[in-house]
Image (cartoon, rainbow, N blue to C red; front, side, top):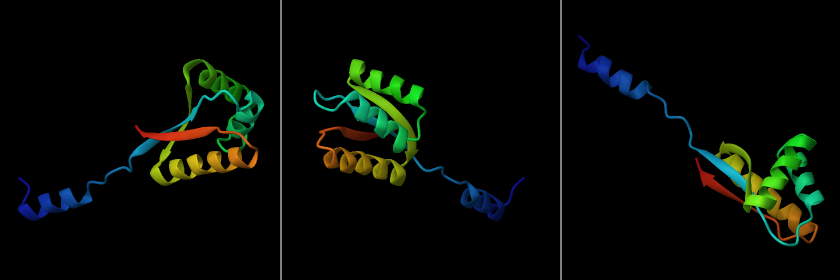
Length: 99
């Protein structure tokens, strides 16, 4: 039988994994398909085929999953998409949702 001290140690040792967040690109009527593919390859490190598949998902389903990350990384990815889209004159947006 475990003592109170052993139980307290076990409770302290249990680690919590950080929450994960899904990052999605949202469809719009102005951003070119080529630019979306470029974003997916450069910011999300997708192959051309993966990027093309996600781009088609965005086009057909209004949003496409780019990846799952910790909060800080997901937030950074969303900001990077926004910054790069603005620099190129596109309204492309990314969002993050808790997994």
